[in-house]
Length: 163
Ligand SMILES: [Fe+2]
Ligand SMILES: [Fe+2]
Image (cartoon, rainbow, N blue to C red; front, side):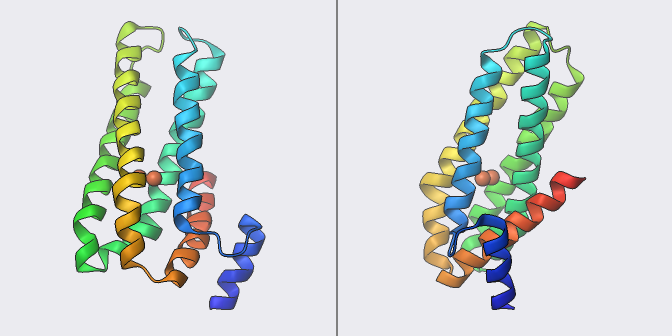
């Protein structure tokens, strides 16, 4: 099992011993860049449509895979449950705002105001994971959990992106 995970890790990430935290932070950087890019777009333009569709897919696939890897493991440990529940609730909040945005007229001021709210909540969530949740999780998990979860995250995210 461990060997299979390592081989898949090699195939997916190309890096031995990739940590789940490093892997998640790389995704967070992509989300921050996409959110900034959307702020540079205007109206109902192809640029805004493309960047928003990409960010929405990224947030959904990342949150789903994060819940199935890191947060599923934290939920199984009593000390990990409060933080896992908190983050999962923030994923639901982001999913709800994303859904609202798909219903709003992209060229309207209401869309931009709602997007700015999403960006602010997203940045809060990513910063909180990096500053508080990942360091706490690192204390609870074994070193093999930290590397195995990166492989599981990549698998689950790839599956979600195929949906
Ligand atoms: Fe995350
Ligand atoms: Fe998250």
